[in-house]
Every structure is written in C-alpha cells, then in structure tokens.
Image (cartoon, rainbow, N blue to C red; front, side, top):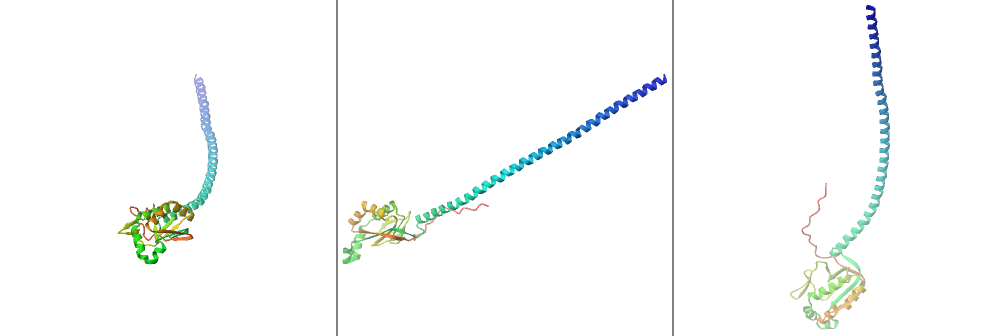
Length: 246
C-alpha cells in the first residue's frame, strides 16, 4: 500500500515536471518569438527609414531644382528691374519736365510777338504801350493753350517757364506770367514739332486776334531751342516722407 502511494507520488511529480517543462518551453518560445518579431520589426523599421530618407533626398533634389529655377527667375527679374528702373527714371524726368524743374533743349519754334516794324520807327515805346493796353491775358492764354494742345513739350515767355500750374493774368494793365510782369516784345520759346505747331497756329484764330490788336507773330523754326527751368519752386504740402521699415 505504501509502495503504491509512493509510485503515485512519483508519477505525480513526473507529471508536474513534464507539465512544468512544457510550460517553460512554451514560455521560452513566447519570449523568443517576440524577440524575432522585434528584430523583424526593426528591419522593417529600418527599411521604412531608408525609404523615407530616399523620399527626403528626392524632395531635397526637387527643392534644389525649384530654387534653381527661382534663382534664374530672380536673375531675369533683376534684368527686368533694370529696365523698369530706366522706365521709372524716364517717368521721373518727364515729371520734372512737366513741373518745369529742368532746363530743356530741343527742336521747335521761337515766336516773336511785337508791334509791326514800321510803327516802331517813330516811337517804339508809345507804339508798344498803346497796343499793350489792348492785349488781354486771355489772348496769351489762348496762344499757350494752342501750343500745348498741339504737342508743345515746353514753353517759356520772356524766359519765364510755363508749367501746369502757371498763371497768366492782367493786373493794372500789365500782363503777368507767374506773378512776374512781362513787356513787349514777347519772345515765346517752344519745344516741339515745328511744322505741326505752325500748322496749328495758322488754322487757328490766334494770329487774326493779335493782328486786330496791332501785334504780329513772327515764327522761326530752330533745330535747338532752349527753355529755362522754372524760377519758382513748387511747394509741396500735406506730404510726409515715408518711414523706412525696420
């Protein structure tokens, strides 16, 4: 009886040992498989990283290509900016010209307005004064408007430059240009197409009006006419210098 119990005990121990061994083997396998899986995941991870690096490399190549194209565009733009600068410079000079801030020279006309020569032989001062009193500021403005309207680039009367804001007024029987009195004879300097300006004057009523007053307009074509810059400095108001950004 005692031997039977001992045999059963050994059998139980053997069974437990077998089961324990199997469990250890299973446990070993369960721990070994994740290690293999981790290695595989690591390899896959490395492959993914390599692929990502390849993609980044390609993206960098694309970025380099893009910036190279931008560089070329900027270089072309810089050439265009030079052209734009030239245009802006010409526009600035045109604005200065229109404002009368520069002396101008070019082909055009010189109009001499005076009493006929035969009337000057007796008493030039009295002859001019008599006619001068009949002359209106509107007559001079009509002449200037006709010239500007037919392409005159610059005009001066007795060395007084006419600008967009110039005034021609008659004050106390005296014709004033930009508040400066002018006296006969008048010398009107005009830069522009001489033929076109002469044709415009001939078809207008201006020569007739001046003849009725007692004045003759004698035109002379010139290859080079100099028109002085304005004596007055334009005053700029309500403008401030733009502050430079940081």
